[in-house]
Length: 110
Image (cartoon, rainbow, N blue to C red):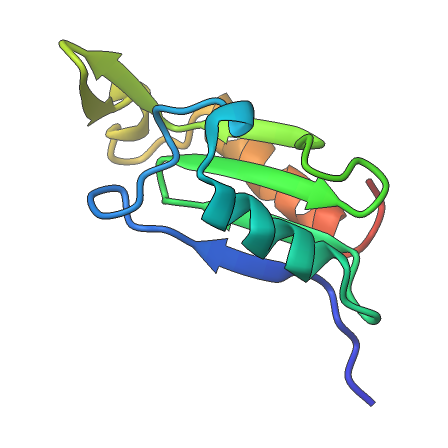
């Protein structure tokens, strides 16, 4: 028996970026993909990411993310990793929050 936790939809930050858009402005194609994933019989959760932005969806919220994490800064319309993520031996609070939320989301605690 397979225990489905979530579908992970990964987009390229160069070819199909999501980091610079609000979820309302995603392409119709992406919205259709998300709806299809959320309508599956054995799955009710989707993680959408382009590595810069992470969004978490569940069936009850539909196409409105339950939570969003942004791991970048926009300067002059070009993305850059948030400087606090570059620290060698330190993991920032926001990254820790993403990691903890991901665990809770996968375990259906959120």
